[in-house]
Image: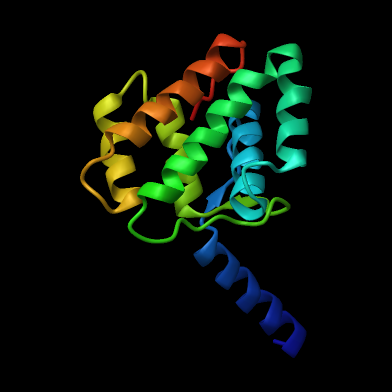
Length: 150
């Protein structure tokens, strides 16, 4: 094995360890992921996140945008540790990102599962407020015809 092949193999193994999940097949989940990544990296007022939601939802973009901002603020304020997010260009997801999308997909249909995922993600026992924010985001997406599925 050449040095270049060894490096490429090592880099790939390292990347799949840090980013073990592929992007979700659901376009709506990918929109939510992009907005979460942008807001997580650049702040709640990120213009690209707002533009993405505007493009996806048209005139009905305000509710998903504001609720996504509220969810991100709740996550940041409630987490016992850091929540790992990947850069927007990554074609794979961190375990935390996969958990967040699973929560959005399951909060209405499997609330007990969503609660356990949120508890694990945040590292705290009381997750009702953040779970309510996630339910509001999921409802906003669904009400605009873009349900997040997992």
